[in-house]
Image (cartoon, rainbow, N blue to C red; front, side, top):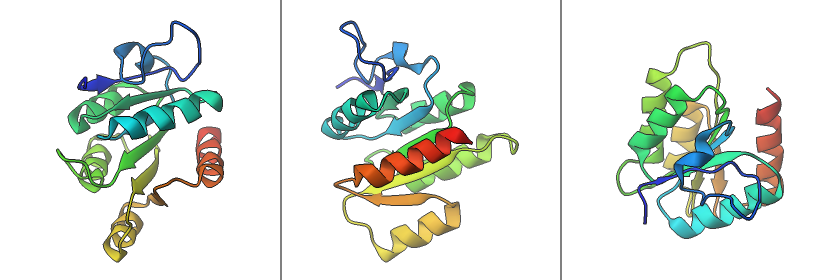
Amino acid sequence: MQNRNEGTGEQAQADPSPMSPEREIDSQILVVEDELDTVVELGEWLDLKKMKYVATNEPNHAIEVVTHNESIKLLIVDAYMSRMSGYSLIASINTQMPSRRKLRLIIVTGHPSEEDYENAARLGVSVFEKPLDLDALERVLRDGLRD
């Protein structure tokens, strides 16, 4: 598995994989997930919805993408990744972002606990349980892209 995955979200025969660097340009959604199957499935769905996204399985790369790419408006982050928790990643991004820039943050987890909801409330993020309710996720994403 590659360490970096980025995509434009537009389907075409020559589209790069969700984790290729070409996908960073003009992407509005950053997916941070260490399970490749989830990245592929979510990426296919985002492509169908014509939403531009980039994906990575490296939390440090996610910080770099967000801080250097003003077009990113939304983050979809796995709560429990092997290298860094989604909550730690969001806290790191929040400390490095200019206060004028607003991001919509979404945590996804297979088994949300009371602690997940407490952490999410503290950080001001939405929590989605896997398997994802794609209709609800689409509403949150479209709302976040309008801002």
